[in-house]
Length: 441
Image (cartoon, rainbow, N blue to C red; front, side):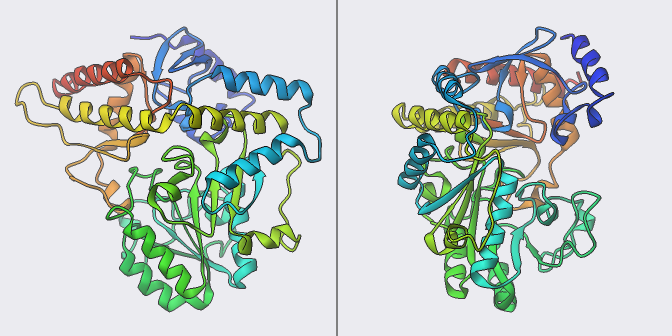
């Protein structure tokens, strides 16, 4: 059993000065308490107690090249030596924008920010400015940041969700103002008929439909058939002059250089990218067609930020894109992810009865979701409520004891630093864990 005594001491110390002892809510949920880390290199991360983990968390997704990629670090060091922040334009920013304009289908114009949350906020703002309408449609279980208007419809217990045709808009947090949900229409994912019916009724009020192209934050659920749902959204938005917004904070640079819009062949009006864009350095981009970005270009919609386009983050993004494109990383991510999913299915077996363990592995490969459920497929957030989350928490804890770091909600990430040997090792360890869980250990 690994020791986490130093992490425990540091967490107790941190709790005296950091609210909850952490700087992001999602960091609370490590086992047996929030862990402190000392070093990450390639596919491994080491905590302050000296425990080394094969890492499939990848800092919740950004580390697409693995920890501490030497080309990224070298680019950041050089850019930092030239200056951290100019409060003005610089050449690297222009080069990055030109690069993204070339590779992202919708990116005719763009603006850089620090986080996906603020870029999603800006996307809704410009959609309202262009259409002259206030409401937006989003989907149950999708995540578009933690700011007020988007802090609703993210989750909720089955008994609170309400009917599929008219779901209850459930607040994600306390502290939201009364009436915060007045501009939000909410529907289950992957039900184009419901979208059509709802838009017909509310088209005169709707500025935008915002969606994750793959429902990564809840079950890593792909669009139906396989992209007819996204094409349907595109057609509906065209018909009623509504902005289609893709939140590509996770799918961006993971499914393809141009994101899910390249992978599925469906181009939105606006899109938000983050996470994998700069290998862990803080940057996001709101990009879109000229019609929708023009209000920012002419200053009628305000987009600002003192820390936007800092030299180190922009340099990290350019270096990351260089490696992704030069080394054809995506072929590797898909191959390794699908190998891992296939292997986990094969070893998920009760050692006594030889019956398969009811585990569902779903996703494209560069990221995927694992969870214990009798379902053969999950299509929307309501399906994910049938996952046995306590059982998966025990699985994650047991994998951690054996040196494999996973995200507690079931999402796995693959990086360019992972190898076939890493994948096969994870499969072997998971097989042992499945066996021990079946034995009640």
